[in-house]
Image 1 (spheres, rainbow, N blue to C red):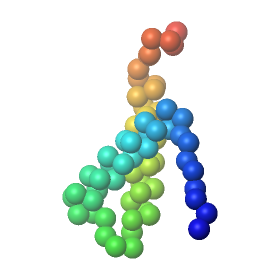
Image 2: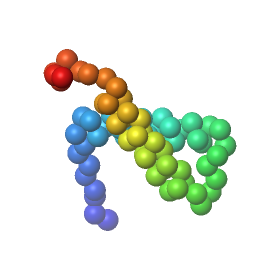
Image 3: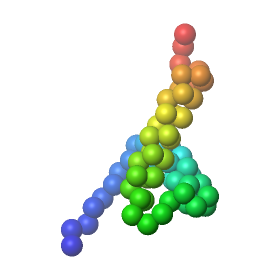
Length: 66
């Protein structure tokens, strides 16, 4: 079996962590049922991306200028 290697950039890792947290909340609340894991994983990922983009729009970091 071939191994897969993943190397995420820091920003990608941050979004992946957010998605994992969102997905864990779905599991804890009983929303994820057998056979629908992929649907909930994708939903969590999309929500994490939207949250990240919203934060980027609302927050000006130290290295950003007007």
